[in-house]
Length: 308
Image 1 (tube, rainbow, N blue to C red):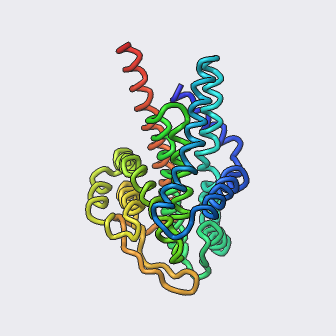
Image 2: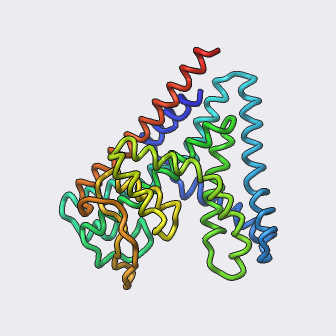
């Protein structure tokens, strides 16, 4: 059922992408605001209580519903799984930016590519070169593929029913909403949300990075992971980007001029400068990683069936 649910949800999303802003982020934003208003007094322990109250009840409620439906008929539980995955994966809502940027660069429409990457990242991009745009798009795509596909899939497989998918998506949202706020009165309150997501993402993130290495240039991916990832401002994203860059044979990171100033960033990866061709290679890397994961789930399912 796990494998079927993942494949069905992914195919449905490819055919009919979900409006994530309307159906996922807006409701989660209201939940976050509700608990912020009632618990945020600048203390870390109240941030922990708010996080638990925000994440645990919906995850457990959906888990209980799954078991009830499974008792009635497994098909009902399958439909619930697919529905929850459709809501929590949401890769298509960011991949369309990547596709549009790729198309613009291939046609030589640099101004359009700059406008798209600026809208995607929320930062000015009027001075970026075509290589800069391709490099930033590849970076966004590698991180998004993990956050919106592989991380969700990992927790969906590990925890019963759709509990893991709900918990991971809510943890990721609250880590951004509470954990990355710089205001003094918010820093302590968001500390637990930030730490909780780092803990939840520790293993799946490294499995995704390992999968990038397996389906790409393994030696270079592992070398870049070991020697470059820690330099990145966010070590977790650095692992994904370093491994992905090494697997692709492309150079990521490096300083970029955006929003009127130069952002200093370390170099990640080995090989050539990014361009539209490397963007195409990135699509292949993500698809091969997805296929590898599905193959492993299939083998585990066969082994479990044979063992029983």
